[in-house]
Image (cartoon, rainbow, N blue to C red):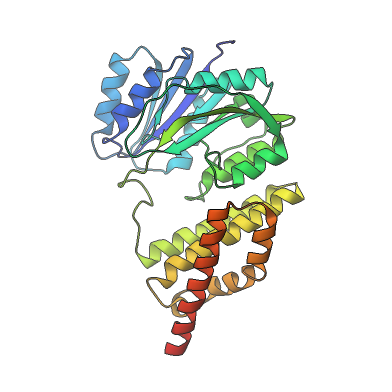
Amino acid sequence: MNHENVDIILPVHNSEKFLSECLSSIEKQSYYNTHLVIINDGSTDSSQDIINFFKNHSHLDITVLTNENAQGVSVARNQGLSVARGPYVTFLDSDDVLLKDHIGDLVQTIQLTQSELAVTGAVKQTKIRYVESNLKINSTSIDKAMKAILGFKNIQGYSVNKLYKLDIINRNQLRFNDSLFVCEDLYFVCSYVKVITGQVGFTGTDTYIYRQNENSNLAQRKELADIIRKGKNEQKAYSMILQILDSEQAKRYCELKKTWTMINFIKSVVSVADPYNCIPEVMAAYNDQKRQFLIRAIFSGFFPLKDLVHLIIDTCSIKIKLGKLNKAL
């Protein structure tokens, strides 16, 4: 394996609870040629102190960028890309950890498959379990990879469990869209996949471990205004992704996922308020999208069985709730 440089871009915002463990997992990587770019995005906790201590005591090549005020994860990642060296680049969230062979598995996969994108599994764990990687390299077509990226398993549209070529990112002027605060990862990944050729490499392993920081952006938001803002931004993201997709199959999958997210959005809304009084335009969009949706979803081969079951239950519960609301008006 050719040990070319890998830039690891790590935005940090109020991550003191998990940051030390995250940084430690980077330092323990079996792949030795890395450049860690840390962007402290307006943290008001002890994150900067943790970063300073790590930089002073680590053997890693580290660049630290600091934003006095929080700019958002998209801006922070773009700042990281501006100082990346290549030829490879990956991303990491400060709540998460990497198994020790994560970077090595990705590099080996992209080199052996001669791909322009390598992907590993991302799995959620509450208590991190450090297990050995069992590399099972394979590759697949871009169309099949796009289905996995838009789908529901451990690949999905995360930016963090993938290895990219920096020259492709820069040559095509790809950056994270800072008008999005949800699905910004998916938009970036789909934009990247659109411009690559050949196969996409898969490690066959799950080496990226993620968890949700209860203090992070969007976590635990229950207020109606936040639900509406998040839902509208999510729908905007999928509309933008539809515009950049070339494959008709990928567009169909994206449209199904867009409606799936709309159903989850409306489910959240009707649980806290009368949707007809607060967001009539969203309800109109929902009513338009849901037509024949379940039939298309069932025969698409896109949704896992358990998700289809949840879709049917959620759609029926929304219908019942809306019926009760109509009677009350």
